Length: 254
Image (cartoon, rainbow, N blue to C red; front, side, top):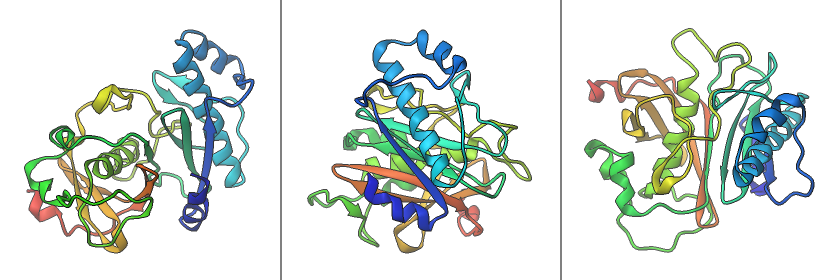
């Protein structure tokens, strides 16, 4: 995961990583302690690891942050600070941005590949052509330009985009002190993913330049973000680079 740091730095993003196995995990303040106290042991370790990852991501872009309480399942940051948190298989990751209030921010880590059958939970018929039907080994690193996408890659791209799009709208940004989305909720295979309502099938993903993709709200195609998905071992990491300025897919969504 740390090999991703230069890639994210080049995109103006800070990366924070933490694991549930770090010794002596402690809440950073009373609000975090109160939230963690009601959680099962495993979830508590994931929650605290996610908070540590968020603080490390913010430090990577020159911002300090104390405890990060929550409102429902959403992390609440001090004014001028925000991060997107995800975790998988005991590893928590977060991305943060130093400047640009209202800029979309989202990431998703998936270290357990999804089966092809999960495509029906992620994609609609007009997206199935994006899937890669070739039986080839899954290799870590940058995905080959022009190749098809795995279900895991498309799921991660949409999850990262949803976190960004859920907190933004035309002329608006995330609410005061409120990041886009936390890491909880349920996804395929029973994994937790936060989502206010609807499903990933309410987003449409399409290819973009340099192996990236553009993800749009089907109900409002003007709301779109560019997402890069990087292979990490047998899993993937998706992160939002910024808003998409092109509307080339909007006509097809009508």
